[in-house]
Image 1 (tube, each protein chain N blue to C red):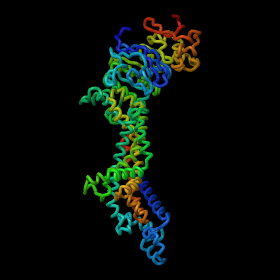
Image 2: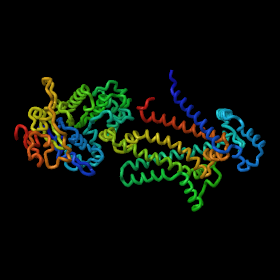
Image 3: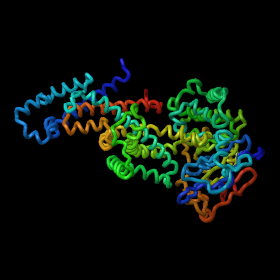
Length: 322
Length: 317
């Protein structure tokens, strides 16, 4: 890693409060200054919870039970509410999965955007212009009208653009994107990806991109973490992972992707079985039950994360050998 | 061409017309009439000739249709009919009794809404906690104890034990004697306020708990908005629709409750006017007073609709 660190997640564990069930286990990853990092995984793999825990936005009934989240020398998990509030929307901003529900339906958009500025230092004469500038940057046509409108007057794609404008308003150093394109159709998805990519380069902003779609992150991020059943099973640069996946799960994911160059008629391969619940994994590799390479050991021991150079893998029998 | 509010006005008029027929018929279905109402058991001593004369006097010798038309005519021209026992028009009676009931209704509603929302917020802050239990206990008790029990309880304790019963004196309007008026209105207002507060509290609590898990609330926290502002601007603001609906519905019950409460606390309002008129079978007084209540309820409903549009931009103008 060449860049200095901006955010470092170490051994993060998340579990339900009542009847404790592990949802995220020993998750560690780093984000360098200006770097874009992706987290890929299926529904229920814990990727969204990991992202939400950074800003302390976990839903009721779920809590962080171990680990640390270090952002510029501060452990975000030990900050009090007010200290954390000052970072939210200011130094670290977030965009969410469903733009249809992420905006307050009874508040004018201009007011919702200005609220970000108001919460971090207050509004002055230039604030309105600041909001207008960002709305035009994200491609909102009639900016003045948009500020006087309510969310229901816009389509999903437009609302996600507004969410992005809201996140970029105070030029955060880190943008956390929790599947922001999942709820949108494919053409809009591409527009949003291009928009975020450009905005990021312009600001030299770091980014954490959560997705279940490897195709989405391929051209967007520098490094990739693959999550399965609450753990990170493989991490590395995008090139490495796409070219030489080590974990059987990553390989399975990649072979299930349609390629634009592939000869038609080929059937896409799928991984048989269903993902294991993170709290049922216990002392085994979570993927063992679905893995063609699994042996007795995989069912009785947790594979340790083996770090080599720039990448890591948690598998006893990785592809390409150790 | 579309006239704004036309269909709404028509439906309101249809509702009021329906109510007028219903009230008119119900009064005539119940046993007894104006004569037995006025003479009681002495009715039996009247000769058929006297009864026939009295029927003419009270106007009940006419056909039902003619009686209805003559009442509606009197209602629409503003006299609201004639109250035989007092010898004045129902309009004259209502002019002095309506302000009492309106004052009581305002006190009850304001008290109920403020108390209900406050306790609802107090409860919803930590669901399942002791404070939530206390709030819910209030809600259940307030729902379970009928207004007449609470009223009689207050009267018994205050008058017998503490010899404090301002309602024992002649009723004072706020203009004549504001301090006395306040003392006389305080307890009946409280009884009605508690009755309104219970359902408002329960609605507030459940609406808040539902809204607090919405995505946009998370967005607001993620923007770094201070928690108290998130609660008021985002959570409470989005919970107002069911609260307003419940308040509008409670207003109807409040008018019904006023009938009992006014009687117990000896307030010369519409409620007592209706109750006394029912006993005497003063047809015009009962009919017109209930129509006035119906108009008030309809107006409150129109007001709720206007408030909906104010608080939720998604409702079509």
